[in-house]
Image (tube, rainbow, N blue to C red; front, top):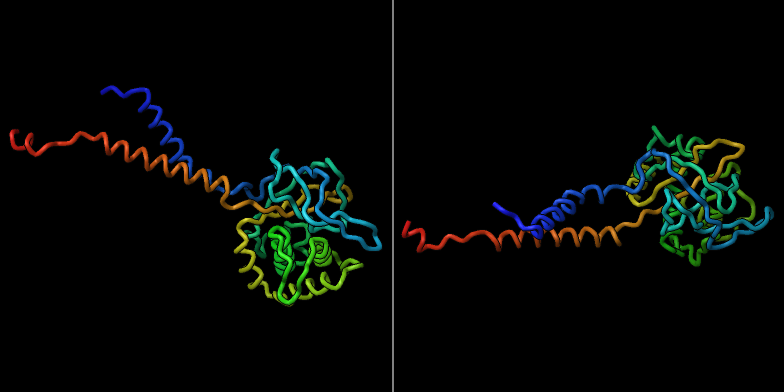
Length: 251
């Protein structure tokens, strides 16, 4: 039986798209694989206290050669980075954090799972642009950043304003040292990843959080692939030979 070049191309396209769907649905990072992080030197806001002015909010970054659409968020007040700096980091999906691996993160040994759940709450607000937490309203990106740094810094940081102080108290109250509640909450954050630097002090870069978009171009790819697969099956059905009743009666 001969098959035209057009049909062969269609079959090949269906195979590539249909069998390629599972791989497109996989996560962007493989935990705890080493990833390349480059800080592009941009931030969305500034936090100021007696230490001076500090870049806050979301930062521009290139991860594994691709610009991060969400940007990255720093949870580390003590280490410093400069524009254009590049480093290697282990990636940990928030959903994977547990008592057995939390110490692999930069602050897990000191703040534990509940501390990372507190930070994750504020990080999620930053990525989503949220300005309200409970009765706390008008929250700024700088206040969210400073609240995060206060949680991860031993003894806290100086210069928190009223909203940032309330945020820290509120998220601590939300988890109240309850590891089970923290684990359950972190398990819902499928789009958040932590990038923990592989280098140690004194030249250690900062730990960052990144959000992997859910949907968007990935969803469009899946829709197009599904349509292609369905169309191919429909085309094949339309081209099946049809046995007529008259031919059955004559045979």
